[in-house]
Amino acid sequence: MAEKLYDTSAVIELIARRRQRYVPGPVTIFTVVEYPPSLKYVPEVIYPTKRDYALAIKWQVMLRKRGSPLPAVDLLIAAIAFNRGMELVTLDKHFEAVKQVEPQLRIVNRV
Image (cartoon, rainbow, N blue to C red; front, top):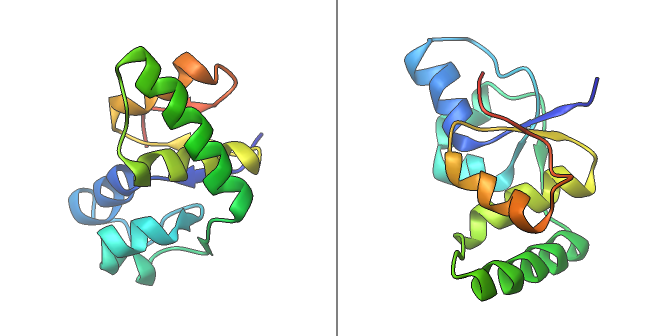
């Protein structure tokens, strides 16, 4: 089973709505910036690398050609998950747009 990377939407669901005391996998620094309380509940924070930025840019170019660009932070979160062989856990459906240009991105739309 692949390790899971938790997006901000999933973290908020677990912590704020379900009142869980932990997130069962790592998050990116972007989730910490978007939702600072997450820092108390996560086992690890992952920072992007140049490779992650390069992949996010590549995907954005492809998505813009299709007329469906995504926010930069979301592309970086998806790139971080992809480059590390992780499943992206998110409740945001717009991550599915990345699958149009990278079908091997693994997304879990539930927590």
